[in-house]
Amino acid sequence: MRVAVVAGPDAGHAFPAIALARALAAAGDDAVVYTGRRWLDAARDAGVDTRSLPGLEPRPEDDDADAGRRIHERAAYMSTQLVPVLSDLGPDLVVSDILTAGGSLAAERLGVPWVELAPHPLYRPSRSLPPIGSGLAPGTGIRGRLRDTVMRALTARSVRAGLEQRSRARELVGLPSVDPGPARRLVATIPALEVPRVDWPAEAHVVGPLLWEPTSAVLEPPVGDDPLVMLAPSTAATGAVSMMDATLDALALSRESGAPCRLAISTVDDVPADLPPWAVGGLGRQDELLRHASVVVCGGGHGMLAKALLAGVPVVVVPGGGDQWELANRAARQGSAVIVRPVSADAISDAVRTVLSDPAYAAAATRAADGARAVDDPVAVCRGIFA
Image 1 (cartoon, one colour):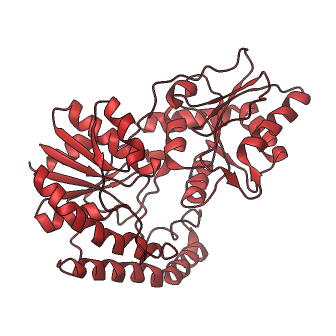
Image 2 (image 1 turned 90 degrees about the vertical axis):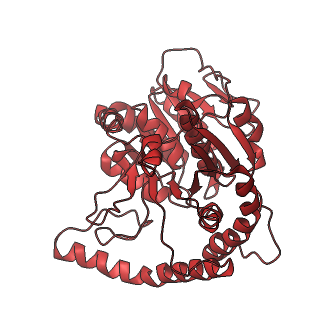
Image 3 (image 1 turned 180 degrees about the horizontal axis):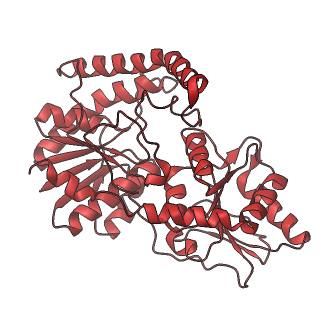
């Protein structure tokens, strides 16, 4: 089976696409990834046939302030750039990232079946849940269900507007206005971060996180036996305070109060040159660091959160934008995370000490890791289309 995997350049979307391509190749299929140029060399070094995704360049008419237009109108344009590229490749199947809808439109224009890849929980609206992004648990009792109903009604207009934008984009490229949807949906998360719903789509399969490390470098933790805190500042700053600065100050406070910790900062960005002897920082394989970590401090992006829970490591979450508030609250309800908002050194220090002193957090993270075994094989799901 020849598969084209299409994803945008953001790490949270490009990395799962590359991971899926590696799984397909390991199973004997021929997979080609189309994504941003930033990851081409590292993915090729990992043995993945990775090519530049056409149509990523911004256009004067793009409105980045309108997410619906950015996703759907750009998707129509991108699909026109992709059609000749995919036609030359001749794939049997196209896997299109949920935010890179140009891949799905191009597949449909070519008459090729396509699969949607969601590198996070299923975020489709549901009559069982409050609106995604609220961070709320499903309401219970009459008042709780009424709350969810009212909230869904308040967001329904935005949902309809998005569907209308998608219909117009489809018509722009000669497709019927009604979207038939994918043959399958790969929901690349762990069950612990999902929420049961009565209207789960029959074509959706939870396949576990699709994880890829863009480096072979290993960041050695600081010497010592004190608990290791791993910081993954996926958001450079939350509010007015840098996560990196706040965490360094937080652990300095902990050490002054008689609760010493070591710190490993996992980042592709620069780290301070004057780190204390109990801290290191730089680029390194996060899966290797997690083998030594007792707690992770992160922004709540799905990739890092899923990595931590898969390793059975509890989390202090400093949620930023996007879906991070939703994910942070799901992890907190599951019992494996403490939320810090707004960020401050005192708050992070207290949260880290809470997680380290209460074994319930590590136990919940272990349960999340154990539950991750109950997922479908993404390769088998893709192949099942042709069974």
